[in-house]
Every structure is written in structure tokens, then in C-alpha cells.
Image (cartoon, helix red, strand yellow):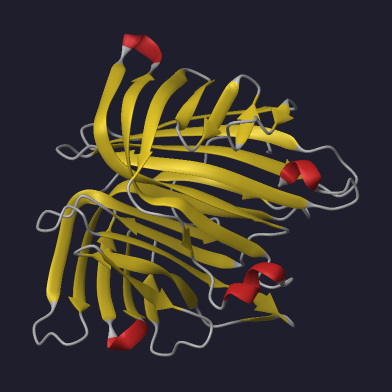
Length: 320
């Protein structure tokens, strides 16, 4: 997509993966991103985070380069790093990775109705090429530390657009104790129109017992959100009367802080935790009792915002 954008246009694009250990509070989050300002050539960045609940803070690395391409058998290459449907290879500062990916579910296209992918608004589009996937391989860190992944559950995501939402939340859940095959993938956003913030809009899906349920949508009512850096509570309404009450909590010291740059020069601070505690209470159509899903470290929670007083350190990595 970035390769076909006119020189006078501005855009960003991101391919990313998360994988979490099924036994321990240990996870990786890796992004391959493109930032293009109007009239300028695009720049590529690699972002790496290792979340480790046994340590004081995540390991974060980022590099930005000018070498970008779309490989024949993949989605994106930045320098010598590459990412495609079969996995990701690359290095970033003091971290390197070689990961094989296996998708277990078909693509999730979050936005409904589908024509929103063809319109100017929202200015951010997103899909999950693999909303449920597993990863095997290795991650190498400074000091000779090696993290070995053996079919760690996770996901692969993709977003792009001319600017980020004014405020956003991303929730992903996997490795639920009672139903290991279930997953949640939801994006929530608020945009600024005419100087005013719109209400939250949610788009995504919940898969449970092999059945996928659509959540949110442009015209869906009943959504409620209470968010902070440390936790988030949501009430989501889905198709055929389904509803989800969710609570995600970030363990102390486990959140990674980043600064995202918009193509127009604006900035957002972003706090991400990929080893969050997540609990869902799901009211399924036709069932009297709700289904409870819980994972101690299989949740991902990302909050994008304008404020800078959130209390999470932002490493001084360069723009990109």
C-alpha cells in the first residue's frame, strides 16, 4: 500500500504481531511501520518490545531507516527485516527475532459497514490478517539472552491511514484458561470533527467455541468505556443480542510507552501492555448464563492519547 502512494500524499502504515507465552507473563510485540509526510519519501521503522512480568520494565528498541520495499512473498521489508504471512525476521537495536507464524483464523476486517474502507473517514483503517495465530522461533536480546517461542498464541494486525484517531483503544485477548481457542480483537476510537470529539465507536469481533461474533459497528448503540493507563472497563454490544462486559488490567511496571507521529506532524503518546490481565463476561444469544473468559497475562491493551501526564516513560527514539 505505501508503495503506491503519490509523492504529494501523506500516510502511515503498520504491520504488527503480538505473541504471549501460554505459561508465563512473557510476551513480544513487534511493529514494522511506514511514515510518509506530504512531498517527502517514506521512512520505515522497526519497533520491538519484550514484556516480562518478572522484570521491572519492558525491553524497548526502535530503529528508523530509509530502505523500504514490498517483497514478492510478503507484506513489507525495512532494511534487511521482513514480515509476511509466514512470519517475521529482523533486528532492532539490541534485539533480533526469527519467528514463524501460523494463522488459525481467516482475516478480520474490523470496520462495518464495509464501504468505510473506501471513504475518507475514518482516517485510520484496520484489519487483522490473522486475529488468532501461533508463533514459534527465537528472540535474541543483549547479554546473550534467548527467548524461545513454541507455538505461543497471538495475532497479526495491519492498519493504515492519513492520521491516527484523536484517541483510541485496542484490546486483544487470547490464551483464556477455560476456552483456549477463544479470542477477542476490538478497536475503539474517537475522532475530532468540527473541533469536537465524537463518542467512542467500537469495531471488532469475539470468537468463542469456533463461532465469530461481530462487535460494535457504526450504528451500534449501548457502548460504554472507562479508560485509564492502568485499566479499562468496556461494555460492548454485538450482533444477535450478544454483549460483552470486559475488564483489562495492566500489571504495575509492565506497560511500554511510545510516541507515535502523524503524517501531518502531530503526535500521540501510546501506552501498550501485551501481558495484561483480561476478564470477559459474555452474554451469548439464546443462553441464560453468561460465559466467563479470563486470562492472567494473555490480554493486550493499548491506549493512544494526546496527554503527556500519564506517568509512563517515553524513550527518546527518533521520529518514524
